[in-house]
Length: 172
Image 1 (cartoon, rainbow, N blue to C red):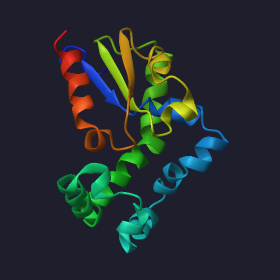
Image 2 (cartoon, rainbow, N blue to C red; image 1 turned 90 degrees about the vertical axis):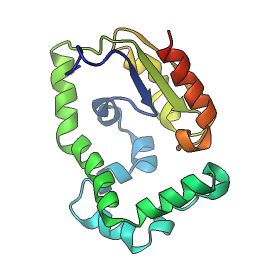
Image 3 (cartoon, rainbow, N blue to C red; image 1 turned 45 degrees about the horizontal axis):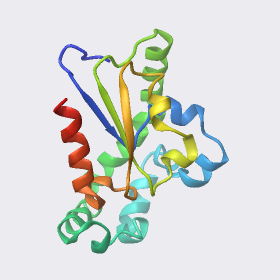
Image 4 (tube, rainbow, N blue to C red; image 1 turned 135 degrees about the vertical axis):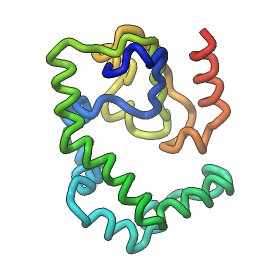
C-alpha cells in the first residue's frame, strides 16, 4: 500500500494482515500461536530459544526440508543475532504493525496490484482463520490463491510447487 507505484505484484506465503490475526485471536490462536505473545516480551524469548535451539524448534529434520536447508536452519537458530531478528518481527506485529494495519483499513486503503496468496495446507493458518483468500479480499482489490501441499516451511518442503505458483503468477 505504501509503495503502490513501485510494487507491481505481491505474493504472500502463509500470511494474513497482523490485525486480522489479532482481531480473530481466540482459544485456538492462544493454544496454537501462543508464541506470538511470548515473543513480544523483552529478552525472554531469545534466552529461551538460545538455551536449546534444537529443542525449541523440535520436529524439524533433513527429511522434511532437505539436508542443505536443514543445515542452514540449524546455523540460523544458533545465531543470537538471527534469533533476535526473528523475534523482533513478532514484536513489531504486536507493538506497531497492527496499528498501521488498522489505519490503512480505517482509511479504506487496499493493495491495488495483483496479489497471490499461498498457504501450506498441512499447517494451521486455514484451520484457524478460514479461507486466506477471502480474508485478503478485504485488504486487496485483485486476489487469487490456493494452498500448497506442505507443512509450515513451504519453501523448503515443497519448493517446486511454490516456485511454479509464483512463476505462473508473475508471467501473467
